[in-house]
Length: 200
Image 1 (cartoon, rainbow, N blue to C red):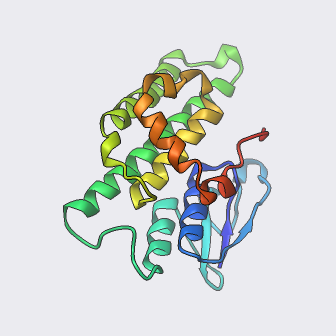
Image 2 (spheres, rainbow, N blue to C red):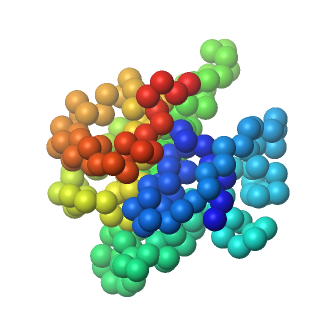
């Protein structure tokens, strides 16, 4: 299968992590941005990454759909099939994605020329980042000591916050979360997919 992705995208990284955990071989293709069309033309009509070629010439998007599909290929799914724990995992996954969304939106707003800054929106996105971190600190004991369907997205969101919103210094605000993150950051799959050091 072919994954259209970029190594610094937290959404693409989720798929990269899940594929490695599942021993699924993906050909990772890093496309160039195409002006106002975004990353991808035909592969994803929205011009966003990731997109997964799951059938010849057919692409799945966006990242929650791709992750659920990859998880379905595992002998033992990370995402429970039903019940309370299934929705806890989906909720955690959504919270991780929401953190990535807030970081991305903050980044976009602050990249504009200073005279075009919308301070109210910048503050809103920054507060969303802080709220997500505070929530994760509260539920730290729920996150698990190994990779789960939910915490894959959380790890990706936290690392993206380090990269694009380092001024938040989330580890100071969430010491228990920082200890949890440190354990997973020692795993081979985390190291193999962490492209932020030295990235621009």
